[in-house]
Amino acid sequence: MPEGDSVYRQAAQLHRVLAGRTLTTCDLRVPSYAAVDLSGRVVDDVVAHGKYLLCRIGDTVIRSHLKMEGVWHVYPLGPGHPRWRRAAHTARCVLATDEHQAVGFSLGELVVFPRSESAQRQQHLGPDLLGDDWDAQEALRRLRARPERAVGPALLDQHNLAGIGNVYRSEICFLAGVHPSAPVSAVPDLPGMVETAHRLLQVNRLRPRRVTTGTASAAVRTWVYGRDGQLCLRCRSRIVRAEIGEEEDRRRGRDDRVVHWCPHCQPQP
Image (tube, rainbow, N blue to C red; front, side, top):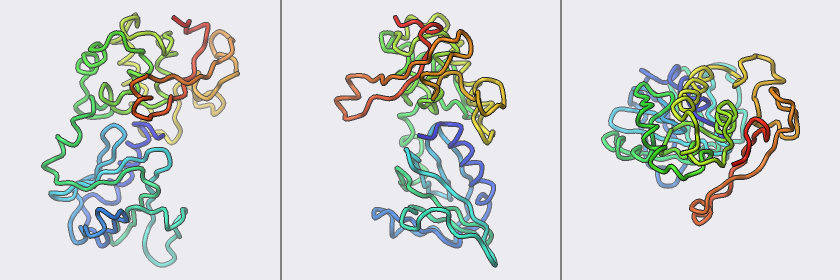
């Protein structure tokens, strides 16, 4: 699933071609909003909030979530313009101006609501790691509210911090030297862990390829994530891959999430 930095880049791309321009086409291919037509209106901006992408058009917001398969593409219009790179039947939203066409394919969620409801609609999210109003102290307060909770699932919970997914969860725990199943109360430097999360997403927010190791080499882009069975870059132990979840999530039908760690650098509690 795309994480906060990926959604931030998608929002920046859409903002460049849509903001300040009049929509010539607004085609929402979701039954609930098929009758909504915002063509003729000017797009104010396109922003990201955690893993959500919000296109704000006057008093209306089009909000999308990419989930696992979703992506936005931008195509220039005019003579000889390129064909869509994905099947037309997977398009869920088409927004066009005189010069560009933005198409959301396989979006996991697409909703339209009045802009006045924005705060209410986003109130389930914690501080946005890439937002202008990022609040580290509020993120810490939310994490500490459940000290017995495993830190891996706590980092993944968008109510605590908005924007972290499986990749960053694994990398943040490794850099902190903490096993993902350790309780929040056992993290020796929780403020440092939160600052690491903020720093990693910030430095990657406009990179074409995510890197958490501080090197541009494609072979070592992450410390542990996706490297199960390979040697730890620090101690040469074998990286472990497993699924960690919570009983609360299982009751709601949510699957356990994959996490990676080094058994030597991050001893299991």
